[in-house]
Length: 316
Image: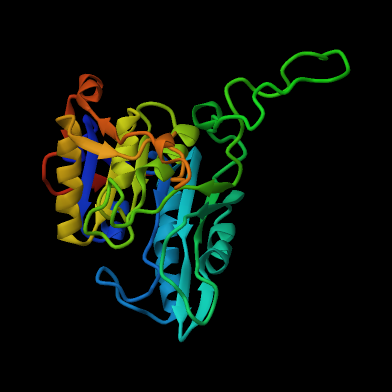
């Protein structure tokens, strides 16, 4: 499949207003290195229609099938989900969706638990304070680099006490593996990144995935983009971003955030900022100001011009 000139390969960010399937069907095979998203949870919010659970899963399968097609053989899919709630009973969507990914030949590498401290207060069950990221790869030869996302060692000066390495540091000086439990604040009212979106991704959550699963200039795709947090996390680290969103208001917010980042005016929560501890308030780092001016030297056209996408499949 060839990309039409209007699907501009010189752009580093393509934002598509409309259903993600319409965009996916126009994308070439094996085009993106990372797909990361949080689809609607079928709760009947303003950006979704509540469906029967089986109908919802069938709808998700159509999107996932196309995502697998456009994913590079060394690429990854990260599907972040919570719970579907029906009359007070919860259905963990990661469990419900897993058979779809498995049936398409994808391999589960991690079930990452994203823990956060704030959310709705339940009265008839324990309050939910985590969601799940399912990380799948298309093959055994996948891109993964741990070093950019290492976190500080708990005991950085710990040394081997016996054997041939006695007296040497026993831990990696670059830091430790962040494990599969991530304690990252969700975007609530006092979060520096807060917009009108009710279920907004924190940029630092996506940064970990982008830095570890892609290289510079790789394409990152978010089929349910919301207000563009995946695009921000990708552009900040010199990756290219594609996103689709059905809500015009959210598309406008995403574009405005990217424009602010170009001007050096967008603020995000830094990846190395610790979770707030009221007993040590001075430990907090100030917000990070994003500046994409340096990225434009590598990718001079940041946002793709508006146009109709046309693709042509090669005759076999």
